[in-house]
Image (cartoon, rainbow, N blue to C red; front, side):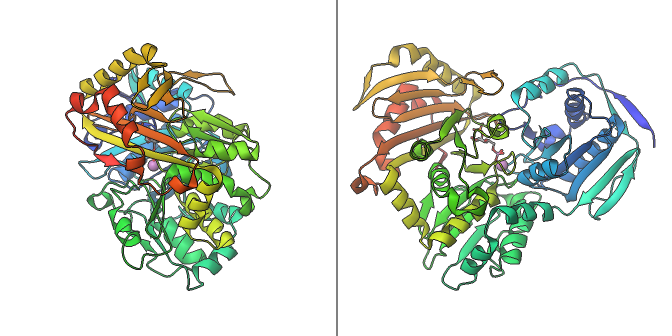
Length: 544
Ligand code: VG1
Ligand code: CO
């Protein structure tokens, strides 16, 4: 088996976005495209010779081929060992768990998360560091710089590895160990949650649950944990077979794309509890009987109830949320007397806070919640957390959330996505907003007065790195906010995200329809940014 050095020419478009490099499958299939990026990753790392690399993906189309290439390149570049999930499968939180458990040097995650898959869909790749978390910007910038000048890569000329058989083989001088994809992750969950109490709830006969894996990676994890370890009836997990194209759907757990779950949970005789997760298993959607829990509220409820759960019994050190996430969790932190951090969008910004034990729970409005148990957001962890809280409190999802609002007040919150906007138009819209920023403060817009208007900039409190232009915020004197940003995970055109939030302390006003409660702010956002006029969209593509 010989190491081959292959000449190549750089691609100019390998800049990682919010979460790694995401492109259409057809782009990744171009000769040398994947190889260049993988070599750029390795070239940006120091001292990994003889060390361990974790490799796994969400099972989407091109996953297996990509893993074979990465393994042969890792062997040629001098890694000592690779840990791979059986069938090439690992959920994103499972990769994080495995990196940490086996003290690996780092890992490569293959996924485009919530983006559709299949030959005409998307593919993605990202590098995670030794703490198990997505590489920070310092590293992703170095990878991008390297990708712009790369002229050769190294790959082993060898047979493909059998990814389906658990056990150890060799590839040149590198050992390849194929691991059961679920076991280590499930074992970690058992250390955090009261499985016995959850089992009693799920087998009591008075509680029912529906988990929708959207034909994506959590199927085998959810079946093993809920139907296996926790005794829930067969069929609790729906759409539980991971498919290379996710059955043609968007593996995105929201009210639009998780339509099968929505039908069950908002239909007659709805189960007590419903949940869904995304392509790579790091997102979660929580629903009660006829009741949707916003991810921002979910984070706040988990923080408020953390000590009911064994893994967090002794309290949480702090919380962190991405900037566009609602401020519901801030109120919980205030009451608990702990710090609340506000970071840019993307899980990579939570890593330092988690490592330094400044934050224990983190969350994003985009259906991502997690804790210091790994360094990724974790869909099934959030589902188990909710089940554990439900088992202890013996209340319905709706009662828990309404009680939470009565205690802390309600942050009405919604995100409007405008998908497939022309890139130039979207950039023009953001530039137009930026140009207005200096003049907005003190202005009256409808019944609101602008308190501040800026382009969010974040200084990491641990390493002092600065990230600028992370979203335009317009805050009003009563605490309401509108936020605009462009997505960094899409692969075609641009997606404009509008985030709208207002606060209501009066419990008598907690039952208003969200779009109605935010109606005036939504109108103001459209006027200020000229969304309809510039994009030609008369309504958002997705409202959550
Ligand atoms: C979106 C979400 C962001 C999330 C990211 C990755 O990014 O808004 O909160 O961290 O996806 O999620 P953007 O740039 O499109 O808004 V996932 O599940 O890829 O890993
Ligand atoms: Co994801």
